[in-house]
Length: 261
Image (cartoon, rainbow, N blue to C red; front, side, top):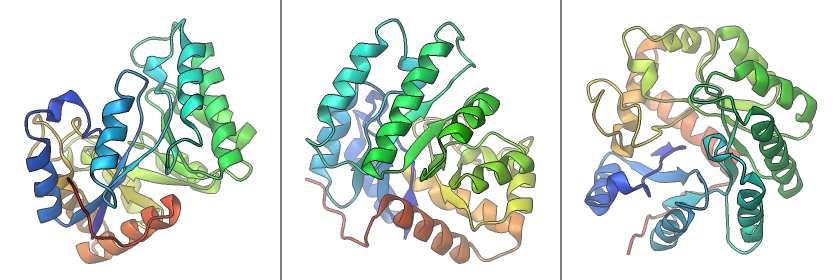
């Protein structure tokens, strides 16, 4: 059994064939999917999907850094209002994104720190977004790492960065990028091993080879596992077992029979 620890299958890109996409995931033995929150504009779609697919779809709550703007306080209020009202399995997707825009960097840090505090208070893992911001992310995490746990989603760093993340109690989210010809992730995976990895798609983005450039989906998770196995010279079943156990332990999941209505 595989677990996709990061899919936005509730996004509009799947509105025309979501049920078929779910069935393809199950056929690929991807039986549990973590749904990271983005913001108030897509949250209801995420929660509705989780309600329709218990024991397969597991939602988190949070505010994505690219959703942080001058109205960030309202987004925080809307997110916090739901805490305790619905079952969630983590906080996020949260973090800092300096790729698109640095205008609201300070606000991103404020929102990120708030979500880290909530995760600590609720004893939940965090899903951390760190595009072009790993140095800034580590600065925040180093201040707040006591009792923290989570995933550095779409891990973007070096072997040294990987060691720092692991030392802070985090797992590395490895997705389709590891299959790209010019990616440095293969070297990072080779040097860090599989023990601190989880698998993710970031669907609908970043599809692995041979699907690169197409819409990503959870059924491609075995491609990522196979590439990691190739890099490490181990059986893909070993990658499946270790990454699945890592995800189950982190999100407090149990083996279940997916049911989607």
